[in-house]
Length: 274
Image 1: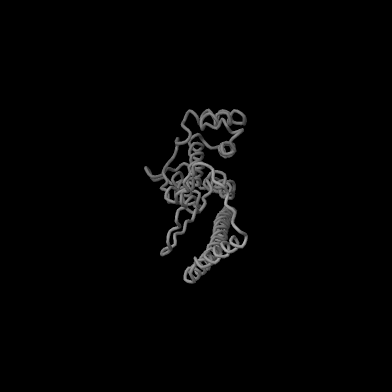
Image 2 (image 1 turned 90 degrees about the vertical axis):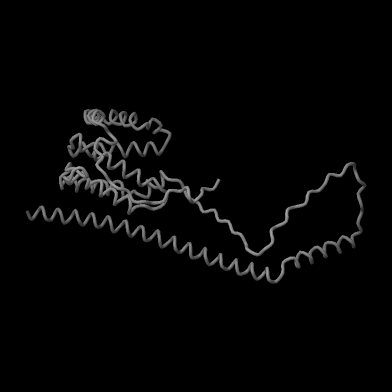
């Protein structure tokens, strides 16, 4: 059954908020940090918490398990506290949820939401934000998410969102409706076959062909030609527009990545001068 356009979620902006202890509570975070160095134990706890037991058969569950595990692993490598680990994990999880909420492109909305989430945990301005990450940690978190998640944004979108297909129906205004076929009544009993002379058969076939050719008037033929030409032109425009949109999205992604890498380079240079 074709999907109705009104039921497909469209990209939208999201308001960020402090999300400490959101995805992982205090007890769960402590248990995960206590299993540092034991990959199997950390994965076991993540499978139990987020119901990913079917990760061997379900590719989406397997992808989520990898995403969650390497997020925890990064927090362990950076020596994050339990508050920082819980907040960082929630930031990654919420960013992923915004990415997959719509099959349409929402890279800009998703990246803006991620930046606002990071700021909510890097600036002391209660109750809207808290100072949980220092500037160096903010830089490390941003670089990690950009290099691991946003570089593969389209792959996550492809794996977790349905394919949207356009089901186009065209109604011609002014043309008569196609008549329904007449029902043929059942004839009781068998009838003797009637033999029609070959000359009469050829005449009937010729008359039917002539009637078929005359059914479509010149006006209808001209209308069909105009409609066909218009549809061909619109399809060509649609293909061209889609190609330009894909190219533009790629350029936007590259610009954002270059901007993040440029910011990181400038920060390193300033630290060396100091």
